[in-house]
Length: 362
Ligand code: UD1
Image 1 (cartoon, rainbow, N blue to C red):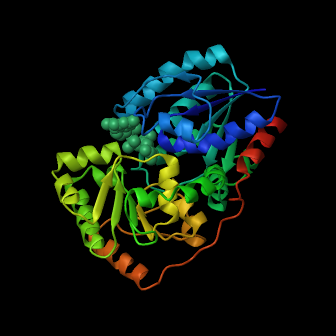
Image 2 (cartoon, helix red, strand yellow):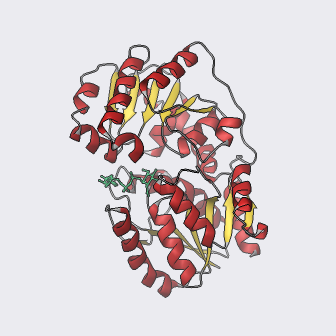
């Protein structure tokens, strides 16, 4: 059997790694990895392959950044001849980025069986580009690997054939489980000279949070207020960096000695910091899940989430994206009023094994 996996953006690498490890353990499967080049900076891409111990991509399509239409179109144009030539038995796509939707569309139209890992998640918010990517990918893929109950329910509500839906758990947790001992040993907080369990770790990059001047400025104000009580460590995504500079907000952060601004971090360093954080403030998808697994309080600065089990079972809470609500939530945290949470079913570090078993059966 020949499986071809497609990755493009940072979170994809963490999701495909356990599948690559699992395939390499089986001697009857050939694996090809295509990187679309959606993310291309070493800190956003290359470093992840080494860190996660997965082979370098066999092919990099080098599409780079652009508007959604152009980026999606370029990926489709570049990947079509490659899939045509390789003719794999299965194409695997992961997550909800432009590369996911673009690769699925091309593969399905070439008549190649296509599996989507992390299927069925819905925020209900069609203004989110990822929501469109999820709907498109799920509606055309042949196998839908689901991470949580809501994912299965959403697909059934959309009329998907139940035979396509496989509740296998969460591959991101596979990566976490394998990397955790190294992450704990690294003690990355020492490098930043901050005390474990004292600091708030921040990641913000959603267009809805960073592309509008007033919105981003309000979030910066919230971080400055929080920093009076807890040191803030903020690895800045390239999109956010551009906006902070464009809106002249970077100085406010840099001039504050309780706020540490860094480049985006590699997976191991970041995980090492999550493990010992007092709390996360984020708008990421995956971090909601990682903090739930680790029982670390997570404030998700969004009006909705496609990952509801992190709220109903885990440590995540949705906080409206304004400084007043963020500070109220922080006060609650300080008063010890935050749920410890539990781990959702099948987030056990063995999801990739279940995925590869299903592919072999099919
Ligand atoms: C993309 C995904 C998002 C995911 C995020 C993780 C889509 C629609 N969005 O968002 O779901 O959460 O990745 O990081 O697919 N840039 C660089 N270097 C890079 C990559 C990007 O400088 O290696 C800059 C470019 O100016 C680019 C901007 O960041 O225009 C945004 O990159 P893009 O890939 O379009 O979207 P993300 O915001 O990263």
